[in-house]
Image (cartoon, rainbow, N blue to C red; front, top):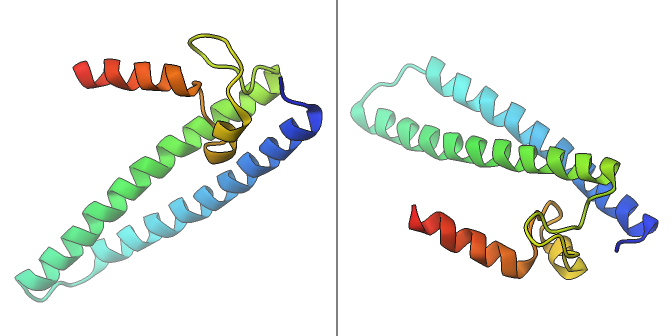
Length: 120
């Protein structure tokens, strides 16, 4: 089980990351709006802008997904269930939480979950 100090540290890390993602999302959205407003002179300009838009859109999707995971982790801290695997209900190792602050599964259950997802 995590100590109160460890929980506070993870809470601050999650909150800091949430602020960073919010900034990234606002910035990327403004960039995408700017690209849409550009007057593109030739196919090369259009292809380049399209490629950037696709990459930026993929980043937006990934960051929104991470934001959802962060919100879930913050809820778990409030409910005092943070750091507990959603599948086996065993503690998630602190080393794993350090790498992925919003981890929902221990290493073993994550591997099982990923194998099941690949089957579909």
